[in-house]
Image 1 (tube, rainbow, N blue to C red):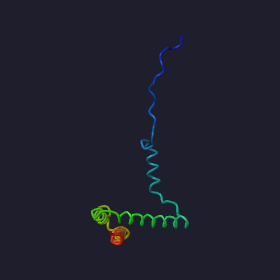
Image 2: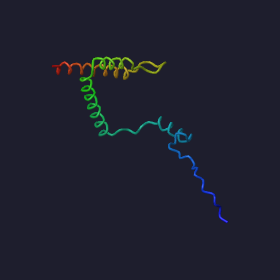
Image 3: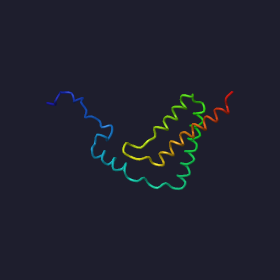
Image 4: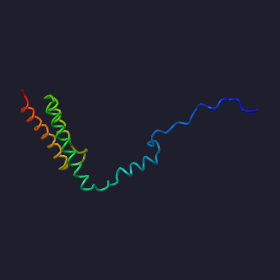
Length: 115
């Protein structure tokens, strides 16, 4: 006589990500520390164009920002610092200077378009 009990509705849990899989996590960590492939000249040019466009877009947005938003942008530039125990890197210093320069440029445009 066949079993009349209904099949179990309990299903095994579906794994949505591999983060819980220790082996996968270790392989992802290993990949994170490998050097990325070299960019081609065309990719570098494209990246440079996109950075210029983004920089100008941020300046345009800062032009319409409040005085408080401009002050916060300057304050954020002051927060760029290395991890504790490490010394300032020239690129880090240059990044903070670029942020302040972007705010300065936005302020110049703001004065130009004030009524």
